[in-house]
Image (cartoon, rainbow, N blue to C red; front, side, top):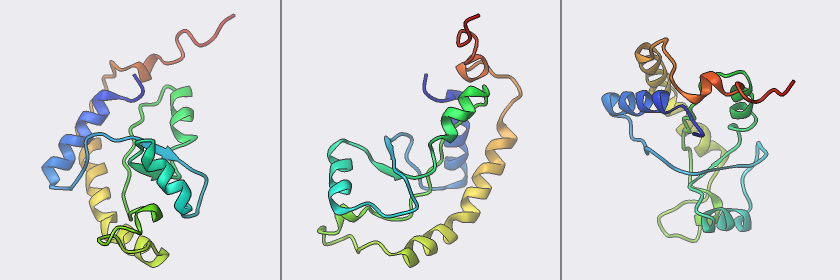
Length: 138
């Protein structure tokens, strides 16, 4: 159970309620940043079946698990990766475009977070709440 299914369900429902375009699932590859991928990296990531290139999901997810904190990733997609530049519909990525798209979507993310937090109950039945139960051997 790699994520908190209850939290994930609430976030998806909230995105749908707010009319925010979203994907219910996907596979993330995490790279060191901040930087853009090379063309070779981008093509390799796509060949592996990874849909999102992200720089901020590790180590946060492991640290949350070690503290038994529920964690769900929300990726704000800002651009197509550089490996798709040979596609006629994809313009080369620029820092200016990334910042523009990110800024345009900040309010949507805030709305999504506030609505999702309101819907979360204090009752946790997920693995997150007991992740360390068998982790310590004494």
